[in-house]
Length: 273
Image 1 (tube, rainbow, N blue to C red):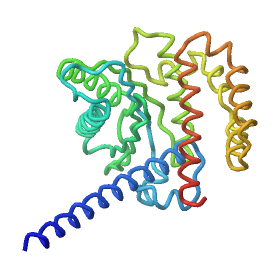
Image 2: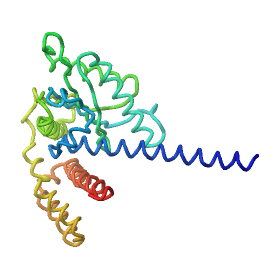
Image 3: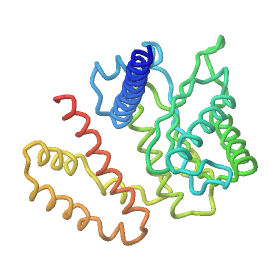
Image 4: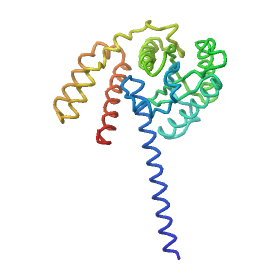
């Protein structure tokens, strides 16, 4: 009868909603796990559930970061939909450009960065040729497509190649350095570490948010010291005033580093960690 049909429909909707929640939670956990590996803060368990096969974990990796400066009018109306659209387009284009020689994973880094982890596929001859030139060519084509087809302005930074998960932190450090260099050189839309590494003011940036700073914030959160937490955050910004006043973008990066700590800690606490 109609009552049973309505009840069945309610149950079906509930199940569908729960499946969506589980899917979103899985994506969030996978992203948190990858970020821990990228920052060099992972455990053996994190590595095991990373989605990389055993042979890949000791492979050769390069990071390519895409910063979206301005989206075209053809993108979705809402910020969330726009972000998902850009993610889908970038991942598909980069995967297609590097198909057959590399595998690609993407970590979204709000508000406007997409970090691509590119791993070599071992070929018969045991090499991948001149990867640097391949990545430069792919970056140029990606920029051309995003500009001409989607009216979207991007800045691409490319790290050097490093070995294994232990090399992720090096790749990420190089990307952070290049992002500062690109801020100081806004006319450049493609920046590689091979050509521009150590050319920017990266040393200033690495002083912004040290491991000691992060551990201090985490300890305050875990022990419930709200006043001490607020004071410590103020001290971090005060210590770096000379850097953040130089360029407003530096302050934004510092804010998102601190916010990243908050997100990781929230994930731990929600799981009873």
